[in-house]
Amino acid sequence: MSTQTSRTSWPKFLRRGPLENIATALIGVGFLMLFQPFALALYTWSFVTMLAGTAMFIIVSKFPE
Image (cartoon, rainbow, N blue to C red; front, side, top):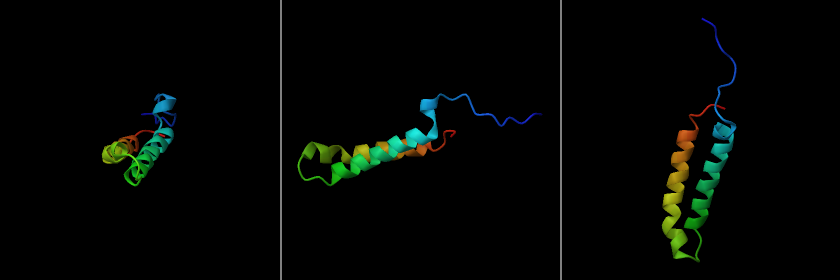
């Protein structure tokens, strides 16, 4: 058997680095939405936004680099 050390054939936009940054930014946006005093709609959707960012981070952390 030969061992392959080459990169996988995943597209560049599905690499771990950029998507982890997007997920982290989504968590940060949800946090800011939670602690702003101006709009009730932003506060209402803050938990869903943070939850989506967290789920995305967990999934993306399994992607190749």
